[in-house]
Image (cartoon, rainbow, N blue to C red; front, side, top):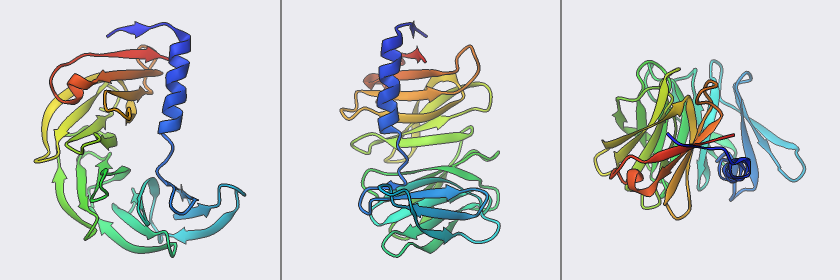
Length: 241
């Protein structure tokens, strides 16, 4: 691991991440913000310009909405308490269906594939799975196993690789690199303690992973180069912030 002590570089990376890590629930096609309210079992729809709440979408009793993702005319809400994903139609602001993931699945993070055909749901429970959901039928097409508290997930620009951030409880975290043709793991990239977010640069040459862990390796950004993103080598470094 190599640490770069240059503060200006660290700050510039944080600004980049801040712009790239805007929640996907900031729905571009409708110019609306969809905000999950964990304690109220609902989602608020907000007009960004005025800050006013347009409407509130109930997800039903017992639900615990957490992470969100959006594509086209739909917003997907991870329901931790309901072991499911709620699908909201943004043209009507109503829940059109609820996708059950199984009683032992606790989804928190969601990500939509680049083409919008697949929705990935990370399970932070003991099962440690990633559910692959067919968005044309809103059904689980397969369940991927072998993860440790999966957090954010993202595909590369061509959609041939899926990168899954594994928080791995309080130990050193890692990123799993999957081949999306069969979802086999082709590389495992160790980062730092308690990684959460991942973004890929527009040209696909680097990935940035934020680490929120302890003093020794927390408050850092791991930078992964293009070769390991393709599963070819294992070079990365951290930037402190």
